[in-house]
Image (tube, rainbow, N blue to C red; front, top):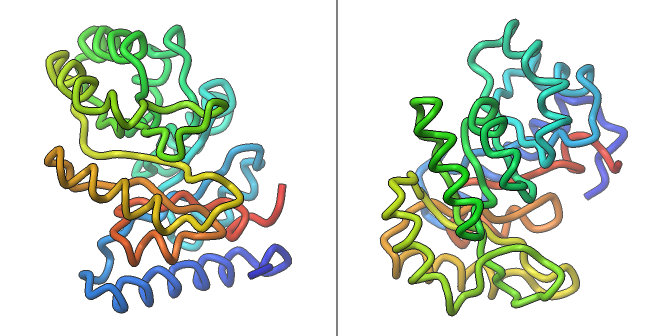
Length: 223
C-alpha cells in the first residue's frame, strides 16, 4: 500500500484501521497492539503532524538523533513515549536510559551490564525487549535462538526488566513463520509482549500476536 502522498491524518487512520481489523480477525481485544511510529530520519515537523492527530508513541534507532529531536517535543507534549528500536552501543547506555521509555534491542551481555549500571545510576528501570536473530542471519544483531534461555537467565539476574522479545525476519522471505516462532519462544519463556512487524507486514504480525508494531514508511512515506 503506497500512501506516502497522503496527509498524516489519512495515513495514521489507515494504519490504525488495519491494526484494528487484524485484531478482530485474530480474536484479540481491540487496542491490544501498540503502534510505534518510526520517526528516524524524519524532521520534527513530520513528527508533530502525527502528534497533532493524537499519536504519542514514536521510535528512533539512533540515540544521537533522538536526543536532537525529542527533548523539545517532550517539553510541549509530556505524554510522548519514545522507544529505542535500533542497535544500541554499550557506551550509549546512560544516554539511552535517560532518553527512552523502552529499549527493543537488548542482545548481548556487554549491553545488558551497561544498561543495568545505567538504570541503577539513574534510579529508573526501562522496560527491555530481547532482540532475537530469528532468521539466523550473520549480518543482523540479536541473540541466537540457541543462546536465548541462558541469555534471559543472565539478564534477569541483573534485574533488567525484560518484558518481551523483538525480531526482524529476513527481508526476502515470508515473515509469518518467523513471527510464529518468536511468539512460541516468548510463550516458552513466560514473556507476553512481542515487538514484530513493520510497514510491509504489520497486519500479519498483529494476527500472530504482536503487541508492538514498528511502522515507518506507511505513516511518513518512503525515506
